[in-house]
Image (cartoon, rainbow, N blue to C red):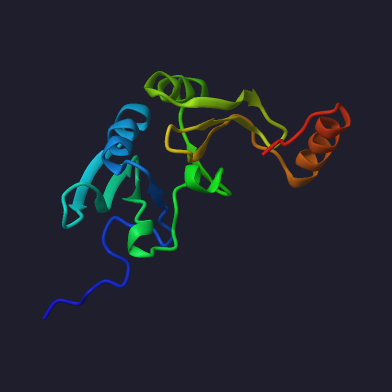
Length: 163
């Protein structure tokens, strides 16, 4: 008898599970914006919404589902809540190119790409479904002491946010 794996093959211990308004449209966006590959989808009984879907982006899986307030589900999409409290981060080969691809697919830049004090080229976008995404390309190895000094300089020069 085969042993069942507690963490399914291909998954990481932590897997984002996004709630959106329009999961089928979100899948199309993530394919265009991030090169996502659709693994599977499970429509709701009425066939109008998706109860569950899985996408692969690089070596990671994200799950997503439509918002189901009519079923009493507590998870809501960020637009229904007025924003997102979470940023989903992607390490990429080229932050600027990744952001341009996302914008071309319909995302909005929320923080232009810049070389950051922690050694990454970093920028953020908001997808059309209200989720925040960040992109980072590691460009410089730094010791904790170097990073601390760079952060002090960064904030002393009036820079904000910096995440």
